[in-house]
Amino acid sequence: KNEVEQSPQNLTAQEGEFITINCSYSVGISALHWLQQHPGGGIVSLFMLSSGKKKHGRLIATINIQEKHSSLHITASHPRDSAVYICAVEKTSYDKVIFGPGTSLSVIP
Amino acid sequence: EPEVTQTPSHQVTQMGQEVILRCVPISNHLYFYWYRQILGQKVEFLVSFYNNEISEKSEIFDDQFSVERPDGSNFTLKIRSTKLEDSAMYFCASRGTGTPLHFGNGTRLTVT
Image (cartoon, rainbow over all chains, first blue to last red; front, top):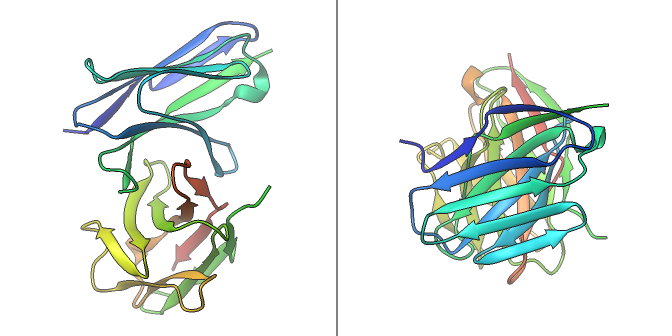
């Protein structure tokens, strides 16, 4: 069984829509990461969080430690947001980060 | 902004050959990682490195793999005898205390 699951696997949205990507995990963690992988392959860290909520621009990440669940929200989506969004968990601080399968997002003008 | 640099961006090699993938992590970072991504699959952990030694390795990281930090700046991944199934994108990452992971742009390894 995968330790990190994401839904949906694929998502197509119209420009301007509010988007939510969900992540659930089955292990105890010290931190959860949201990352973005561009079509060219590069990986960029969006958030690292261990509790509560973080916001950066149009992106918001939340985590519920008790329910082992996190969400990534994108407000006012734009075609440049098209990418794969990956949830990853860190069981022990600075230990390996276990990646989820990713959610492929396509935002259509 | 400082970044993680990986070279080469693309490496083609024949089965059985040795390859060395190179990475220059961000200078004040302490924790170093190699990950790989086979085409169409998720990113997989290979190895973590801290204080000049391996701190953890996955079952993928068998005896054909090794890592080194030879000079305090470079961080290399060596694959001794490549197999077809080693074809993948290899990502180096580094992080400092309390910081998220910073990834390089990856090396695409093609084994023929």
